Amino acid sequence: MTTKLNTLKLYTIAALIVANLPAFAQDTLRTDWVDVVKAFKPILSESMKIQSNPNPEIPETQTPVFSYEVPEKRMDGQPTLYTIKPLSLGTSLLPKLKNNYTKIGYGNYNAPLFETYLNTTRNKNVQAGLFVKHLSFNPNGDRQFSNNTVYGFGKRFLGSGILSADALYYRNVVNLYGYNTLADVGPNNNIKQKFQTIEGKVGYQNILKDTSKLSYKLDGGFYNFSDNRDVTENDFKLYGTFGKRINGNPIDIKTGVNISNLKFGNTEYNRVFVDINPRYKLNMDQLYINLGFNSTFFNDSTGTTFYFFPIAEAGINLIKNSLTTYVGITGNLQRNTYRSIANENPFVRSAGFRNTENSFEMYGGLKGIISPQTSFLLNASLANVKNLLFYVGDSANLNSQKVVFDTKSSSVFNVKAELNHEFGNQFLLGFVMNYYSYSISIKAPYSMPTFTTQLNLGYNMSDKFLWKASVLTMNKRESGIEVAPNTINATTLKGFVDLNLGLDYRYTKNISLFVNLNNLTNNQYERWVNLPVYGFNVMGGLTVSF
Image (cartoon, rainbow, N blue to C red):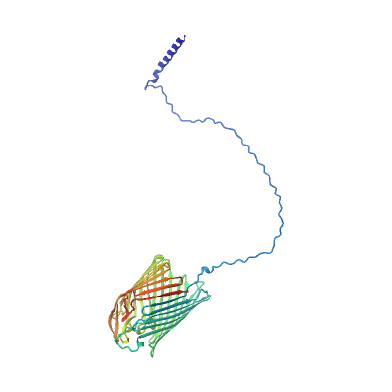
């Protein structure tokens, strides 16, 4: 029975397998499949939510009850006062000024030097100072000279102004060593030239608290200038400068009188100058204009003459605060005195006295700054001048110097260039160049150069070594020697380079040592005809400040 059942199961399974075999065959011709396309609608089933109702408890609060007692204590009612010390600048912010110094030195050519300067300490009411100097060179031969200076000043600061006074004594002695040494010149005093100046000045200047008010400065002065050849010059001046602003632009007027008296032997020459010189300056954004005139009433033994010179200058700022171009016209009457001539050329023994008239001068140029430490100037001018002053040798007076005037109208063309650089207190540079061209009626511009340069340098090395140097150059000059009245033999003065070097060594804050080397090229050139300068010379010494 069991065998029959198993056989029946096998037959049944085999029949099922055979019936399903067509399902595994590939049939590409079936058409009973249907594709249904419609929009998808997502359906979320209902979520099961947990029912929760919060029931927070309300806290119970109770106001605290404090119970305490403040002990009773009686305070002392007597006040205690403290004095507060006021603040002040203190002396530490105002260090002691070492305005006083003394310098002592010595050099070759038997050259002693003494110099001292004394000044008052800080004082809001008074300032005063005194300067004394002696310098002399005493080489072998006749080229000795001596300079002595005593100068004092004082100022009184008032509530409304400043009262000032100055006094000067100056003595200069030179020898006329340009003479022919083979000639008999007599006693030694014949070649000695002595000049002496005694001068005093007083002045008063008001202090303005309101710049719209009138400002003024009054000055009076007198000097006596004399030599050892019975020539004396007395000069008195009284001047005032008044200023006021009109619509923000300044107007100034300088006026005064100058009386000059010259005595030589039994001859006396008097001159009177009365000046009126107004100025008005108009300032605009990029433009400025200066207007005015110089005028002088001149009186001497020949009569009275009135001189009038227009003044005008206009400038435009090409680059604001950096570059300015300007043009202008000017003129003036230059007083030639015995003192001014002898200060320029101390070997002058005879001099005529004419005023140099700069009747009309045109000028123009550029000025500005290259950097905050560097500035420059370029200027060209053409002047029409009468009574130009020159110097020649005087063979009749030991080959001293004599003044020659070009009494006719002359013209002078000048080109000037300047460069200045200052780097704090560490480095200084100054350079000046001048070129001159003369159109004159006399044969030559005697003793005057046509090209000069001057260079000054200073270097501060760590406030310990202070270096300084200067270089002066001058081209050759045409000069002459007067051998007879109105007869001048021409001569030529060579060009030169004068190089100087100096060093100050600060040993301490109060003591320093110095050495100066002058004319390093040892070039004994002639600045004036037949009068060579000293060759190389060295001077050293000590400076004490206190």
